[in-house]
Image 1 (cartoon, rainbow, N blue to C red):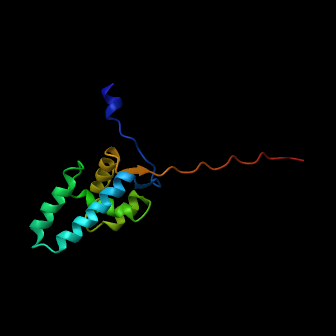
Image 2: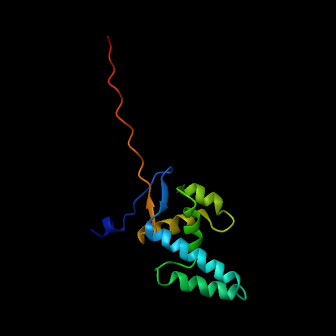
Image 3: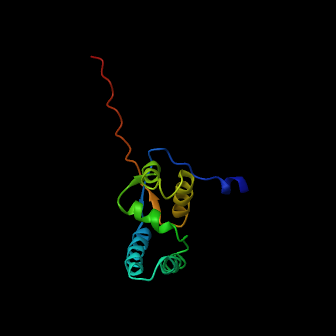
Length: 123
């Protein structure tokens, strides 16, 4: 029973993710926090503002970076990894996406099912 609970959902390489409504609210608050922190006295104030932003939402202080990246539009893991290659390793991106999916900030984009093929007629 425990093994089933610990099993993670695997997504395909082309699976896209987008922000949920909860994630959109978090991105808006993060953007506002960054704008306020720019007028501050330095890195220490920015780090304090990030922890104040992330604490009530149950997020890590680095999660704002990932949320903003998904705020641009629907993205795959490889697209986010490529865009954040200077900031995070592929493993860090994957762990962050899994964490954001669990807390409801991100949601997978459902892929439309293609219509069934027309039956072949041989006459």
